[in-house]
Length: 297
RNA sequence: GGCUUGGUAGCUCAGUUGGUAGAGCAGAGGACUGAAAAUCCUUGUGUCGGCGGUUCAAUUCCGUCUCAAGCCA
Image (cartoon, rainbow, N blue to C red):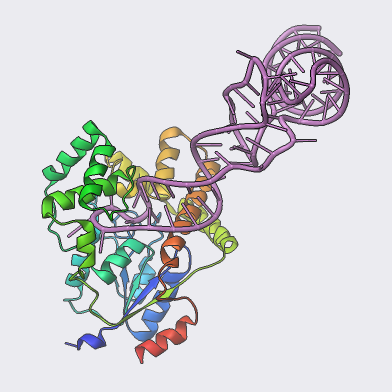
């Protein structure tokens, strides 16, 4: 078993269509490493076309992990991802690891760890959601603020509101308190983060090209497959590309509409991803190859 | 050629009983600790189609022209 410090990891991050996967593949092949997924949609089996997941040829060139392994109706969570990731590392896996994807939340979860709280029982959460339904968000928000004055959760952000209340009532601690103590799952291996990005105009062209291919290569069939099996509510089916395709199928929209609306949603996704990565000052945005060489030597 | 209905923010449209206008979407910026390609927050000056007229005041009323859609010839 190699020493901890020999297990070098490279987070290859950036918006969708920024070229990170191609680079990761090339470098992993060159350095005899592996590619590990950290994209929230590429985890799912059956959504390869729409999420532009690595192809069979890519996987043949370099070992890929954590792709296409979660099946409907199961849904991925950041906590499960971390568990799966560390379990993966117990197996024989070739370093360096190129942890590739654009989901900032999962990258953060892996890098900094998560709150050390047990999973909250479903009924517990349901109870809070019932209260939300019955009394309105304002009441829960008041409770949040009175117990955790530092909380920045907005009244209208119901998902985060419920989660915050859930943590407070279940653990007796506030999210702010939990945040102040170091998570125990801090990433233990040496790593760097390499970022990919383009100008907006370049993304536009790449997205148009890519969308055309997603449609030609079968995103409609993928979507239809899950719709036919009754998985319309499955979370990943509401992600960029799939939700437009579902609407195309259900509302009888034209092909041109599909192409345009997927392009638009993808550009919006890219914008949000840029916002996420922009605040991470540790990402290395240029001289990728020499940064990598320095890190690996 | 005649009639009707429209021409208001990049788009779809509200609205002003006359005091120069507002939503949704798009765009821009931001947040983000177990749904995250999700969820949420902030951000709206535009010759209110052109030109005249009435009026203290017109995008709102009147006339006329123009463009679009529909109907009748």
